Length: 296
Image (cartoon, rainbow, N blue to C red; front, side):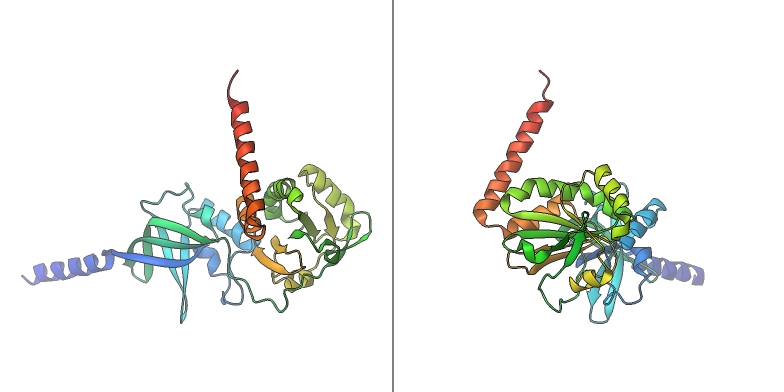
């Protein structure tokens, strides 16, 4: 009899440990392992190029992604598990480091919180950023010819300023998207500029990179971590800022950007008529492309 009571008690504990409850959470999708590399995520927001590289490597090893939810006492991590929400084979890697809202069921295993994700909505595209001391966009660097260039010369236009370097592997991934944005938005008063961390002495290396990745926008040399910090972009490449027509910083991103993300932000800044024209142009390009794929 005692044995039966003991078995029943253990079973009850197991059921309570693995019981699932419906839950709705907002937070940032992170790599569970890489998150712990910084003790204070308030001072060191997650989402740098190093974080993204780490997340990719961990996904290759089968390590999970998690949702970092901020509370009064700090952050709580919830390990993410596939549910009804469709994700890629490397579960949720494509969503690092986006801010999302998820719905699903929660269970606990010891100290570990695990959420099976049934619904997911992207709220923002990157980590929280430090408050800017000033929104004035100030930067002067030399271009590949040795001529002095300044953001002050671009007042009256929107500028997409990308900090990068030839040695930065994640920077290579975003170059095609930045070139695409340059092609699409230049007629609308937008200019992409690349501020390279490479010094002027390495201009030959930069030129080789430009040819290899077909970069179609101006490149300035010698950008420093001090320059990046002035834009509220930390110290790790890549990082990007959008500057408005008055020379003010209006948007920032630490980590890799992509074309849909930049389009969304630029369309918000451009007036409704211009945004509508951009949407029509995209639809026409898609229509032309699809037509070319139809066999004669």
